[in-house]
Picture 1 (cartoon, rainbow, N blue to C red):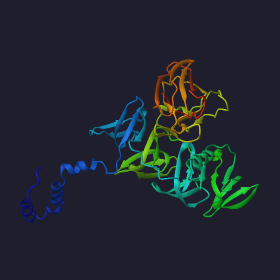
Picture 2 (picture 1 turned 90 degrees about the vertical axis):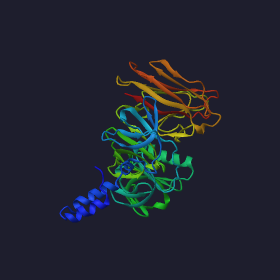
Picture 3 (picture 1 turned 180 degrees about the vertical axis):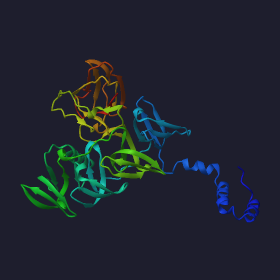
Picture 4 (picture 1 turned 135 degrees about the vertical axis):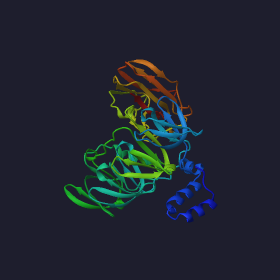
Length: 425
């Protein structure tokens, strides 16, 4: 409907006062709102970053994350403006084309199961059941104590020492609570209360109060931790400060992403601070989450380091060609890992290479066997070689064997990474 001229509005209005503003306001708004203004609601917020969407069929789609469907599907706006909606069953992960930098490790660090973490937080208050913290990106949130594996009060500034301490809090076997002290001692007992300055701890059946400044980290009894996995699909979202959380009910609105955490609190954060996220669906099972049927180590000279789950064999994060990865296996030559296959297992996919930290001396080769027959093999690889992709069919096979072989120089600095190693159903 064409808009009337201003000269037409006044006579009409004053001639019939009963029409009034109920007619004239919508008419004026019709004139002011142009088609371009309506379209602007769908325009990207200036902070919206560009991502790379990696599909299970090997394709990569660059674009802007536009939102999520009710079924967990991901909406992507490609460079040419076309919108594609991707089902979680087709999706592996989403990564930033230019990942935001990690500002450091200052502040306390909350450790959850399955690799989730809340770093660089200020502890505001606590009760018998929860702890309230302030996060730079998430604001104030209340975390149930039963969802935590531990709290690192004073993370080391050195990255290697930091990774070692987080690994201890996350993985060191224990049947009670631990306190790691600043003087190197440990105290074993039962956690009672976290105060502003003191930690109440039960040692030898007696409650004692310990100054928090003398405690590096607190580890909870893993048997008492409750951190249920959501029903798929859900997303494992990583932020620029090292935050990683499993989220359901994800949404994007005006440059901010939100979701419901595994401990039941809804959070939101700038989309521009998202480093990436993995899609967790019934289609994909990461090999690091499947039980190993058999392990064999063949030392070259000294002992072989045990394989690691979701970490390189030295305990650090996977880093291949300058890119970091969250999921996979870390091994050293020579290591053989055997897995029993299920009738629903269709494909095995991964990226393999020597971790960047291996330096110029490291050298390994990778092999994949199905029912004893070789289906994939690389030549000897160094840290200078680009990672190689694996994608082999599993139909009808009963056993999958992953082998890390000796390279050109025995097992020196053999930090072999099987990143994003997964079985597709």
